[in-house]
Every structure is written in C-alpha cells, then in structure tokens.
Image (cartoon, rainbow, N blue to C red; front, side):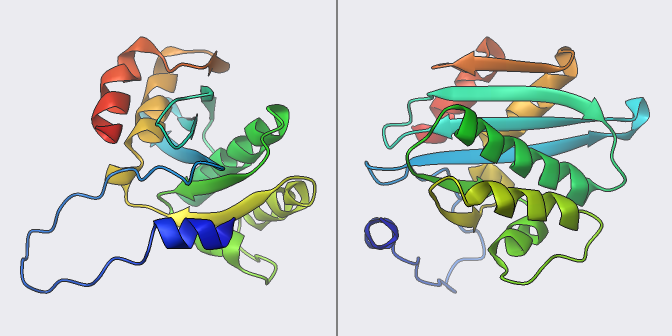
Length: 185
C-alpha cells in the first residue's frame, strides 16, 4: 500500500524560479487508504489547549472528526503529541483498516518516524502511540504545513466552544464545512 501511495504522490520537484510558491493543500490518500490529520492549538490566556482530528477518504469524505479541549500541558510539542495520540486512538475506536497520519508539527512527526526511543518531554506519548500501532495498520506519518492541515487546525480552534470532547460521524461541525470544502476543492 505504501508503494501505491508513493506512486500516486511522487516527490514534488524543487522549483527555484518563483519566490512565491503555491500554497500546499491537503492531498487525498490512495483509494484503499484513509488519511487522518491532527493538530493542537495552545491558548495560554485560558491555560487550555485544543485538539482537532479529521479522518478523510480519497474523495474528501469525512468518516469522522473530533475536537477536544484539554488543560494546558507543559509545551506546545506535548499538545501536538496529545493530538497525535487522539488521532491514533480514534483510528482504533473506528477499527480503520489502513491509514496515513499527517500533522503540522515536524518535531512530533520526526519522533513518530524514528526507530529510537524519544527522550523528549513528550516521549511517553510517542511511546504510547508506537504501542498502539502494533495492533493497527498505520502506513506512515507525514509532515504537512499548516495550510495543508487546515481542517484539523480549525477543529482544534473550534474546541474553544466545547467542553470535553465532541465527535462527529460522517461530518464536521457547521463552522468547519467551508474550510473542508476549500481544502479539497
């Protein structure tokens, strides 16, 4: 399946001609896979953080999405790692067959890809994700710029309006629909 993905999504050529490059957008997974995007947002003024997770198929359809408000952890990397944990646990809860995970924290994605044990302040979260992966079929982890992770980002921002966790099956909250449509279109 990874080979299918790399055939469908070859590495983009490097272009030096234009200083203003096109804004990266969300890329759909191959037809046999689902893609899970996650993001965390920090709100220091209220000592809270928010998590956003969205699962999409190759047509941009959303089998599930969620937003969660949490107490502020010690670092923004920990917030992103907690969002990654929530993405993987959502995949397990939904019994997803095969999936790709994408997030905009290069540090967290690198830690997830690494064979080494993470000794960072969020290393325990990375270890728990890797433990979960033993029982599911995560194909790979990819770093994406925030502009390509906009739905998960807006879900995290939307969590400001909820208490605890909210989950939507085959949908996103109405406040995020325009972002979803613009992201795929």
